[in-house]
Structure formats: structure tokens, C-alpha cells
Image (tube, rainbow, N blue to C red; front, side, top):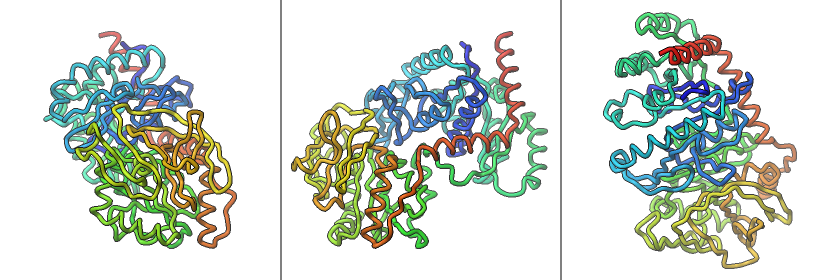
Length: 505
């Protein structure tokens, strides 16, 4: 099927940096003049991305499309799995909910349907682009799953793509994991691997050279690059695995303390990414009541299961601590999507969309009531946000099953063409909205932080970062970093040789 030239990246295990490397190659190929598209057949993530036509795909593929300089479509990620309960996930097909399925049923009943979807999307992308950069998931050596996998070597065969295997040296045992992965592959799949990249390297490369030589001699596979660990990347994380890197401890060197509540089903936590780039902000992720202390801003982010996460807040004592902070009036509280729903008077789930609890009491900070519906709303949104006596043009995206009614009309937050979104307290210190990406709006974020600074008696900061500009700079910095540490000319030649081999067979 190959009109486009494909290249696939697989890893020895999860979190080796596949998404970041694919993002880098999307940017590199685009910089070099190739019309490039990312692809991941099946993604499991709670951080999603909304396409221009209001469809939902994995956030990593949306970000990779941005790196390639193109608009994201559902063909880049035709199947998205969003875990919502133990051993169950919502299956999203071409951006729309398909059904909730348990893992066993998904493997038994969806396999053939999934393969057809993947083949169709690959064919479409191959017709429209010159390069397809394909991302695998987990490991291709999961021998207990390989009979019905549809994200690693089966996809490489469908696309007739050469594969570069990525190993994470930061975890330790990188040569063992690379060699073991290769040895567990079927011979035809092993033959598809054109080389390996060692990722997240720290230290003196000279101490690694003997291992590199041994690996090439032992496996016959070339080392195509050793990529040093890259700090402060400023590119969206794919999923909550990265949350383990964040601390819950207050950094006294930063003037503003921001606490993000990390409930079990947290989603779209990348909403808070812009705060990491601010000179005066320290962001902490909180899982226990005793970690909260007295932050300047508490953020309740999105949730894939709002009711269960609300019950977690109560059981853990975090809800009580937030209520105590609210009474003191020194802390601002901001809820986004599921977090916004939690701030209200009650949440009803009459159709058991998320929970067997048909109705639960909210935190009662805002005059809103939410009821879950069977239809999910996914849309790019914009409007005029009214706060602190000022108006801000803002954009964002919505992904939610609930419909929320504000019981006090004058308390709406964002005026849109279809009415109002969100709600605010009378003193404007408790705020909620369905707009994911609300903090990515630079002017609003600047005003929000300056309001917090005013509460603390600090002088305002008027010159703040442009987060969108930082993202573009981050894509270029990542591309330069990877380009400088991989054998790009060798990879280019191996890709073309592999394509010629397929044509002559």
C-alpha cells in the first residue's frame, strides 16, 4: 500500500519516550520538506485532543500533528481507549464513543473491526502524505498478547514499515531489555527492525561505547542514536505516568503555590502545563489531605469518572481541607470540566454512565447542578470570559458527558455564541468552566496570576510568557536535540532501502 514512506517506532516497554521521539521526527521530516503525518492505531490515554471537526483522539497524536505543521484528524488515531472503571474502558472510534467494554471482551469482539479501521486509516494517510511516522505501544515482546495485538508489529506489517526500537537507559538494564525484546520477536518481525535508539541518556558517552559496540556485534543491529535526557521540554505529556515525576512539596523559592488535585481518574491534566513555564509559579500534584497545606490556587482538573473521584475527595479528607481553605478566603479554587462539576450542589447519573451512584452531593461551592447524559460533547470552543471587571477572548475545547445548569443566571463565566459556560462565586475566588485549555490563554492567565499576587500583597507581573510561542520553540528545540544525536542520514537510507526491498519482493 505504500505511497507514503513509513517509519515506525516501538519500545522495549511503556514510557521509554516513543511519543517524544515520534514528535521529534514529525518535526524533523517537516523541516526537511516532507509532508508528514503521525499515526498510532490504538492509544490508551485519558489525555485527549479535539480535532477541528470536534472529534476526540489521543493527545500525543494531536501534539505530533502540531509538530508536523498539519491539522489533526481521527485517521491519525482511529481507536482511543479511555479507562473509566477497573478493567473497563470507553472505546472511542474515529473520535466518537463506540461503547464501554471490558478488556477480555475487547480482545475477543473488537479485533477484526479494529484491524479494518486501522487498515482504512493507513490507506487514507498513505494517499495524502509523503511520510508516516508510526508509534507503537508498550512492547512488541508481550508474548501473552501478541496473538491479537493491533498496535505494534501487526501494524508494521500492515504498513510495511521498517521499525526502530527504543530503549530507555534511565530505567537501567537497557541492553538486556533491547536484546530480550529482539530475541522474543518472530524472525520476520526481527528482520523488520533496522536499528535501535537509546533514549534518556545521562552522563559520559565514552562510558557507554563498549556496550554499544558489543550490542551491534551481538545482535547485528546498528545503534542509530543515543539521545541525552532533555530537561524542561514544554510539550504535552501523553498520560498520567508522567505524574510520578511531580512533587507534592512546596517550593519556597517560588512566590505562588499551585496545588493540583490528583484523583485516581484524573484526565487532561496538561491543562496546567502553562503554569510550569511561569517564573513565579510552583505546581504541586496532591493525592493526600496532609499534602495540601495552604496553596494560593487549588485546581480541580478533569476526571474520567467524576463521581468516583468526588467520593475519593471526601474519603481522603481532601474535600474537607478545600472547604477549610475556602472559608479563609486566601486561596483561589478553580475547577475544569469534571472538577467544575464537583464544585456544584449535586451530580446526577440517571443512566449509570460513570457510576452506580445515581446522585451524589457536590462540594457546594458554586450554584450549579449537573446531570450526565448519554451523548458526549466534544467541541472546540471560544467566547468572552468575564472576570475581575474585565473581558478576555478565550479558546478551549470541551469533552464531557454532563450538562450543567447554573441556578443563578448572573454568575456565568464565559459568554459563547450558544449561551454561557462556567460559573463563578460572588467574590470571584471560586471559578469553574468546561473549557479545557483555559489556562493556555495568555492574557487571562496573566490576569488570574496577578489577582493571586494582589491577594498576597505582591506586585503584579505584566510581562509573562506566550505559551503557544514556547510550544513552537519546544518543537524546534526537540527536533534539534534529536537531530544532533541520531544518525539521520543512515536512517533515511535504511528507510529507502527497506522500501526498495518491498517493491522488488
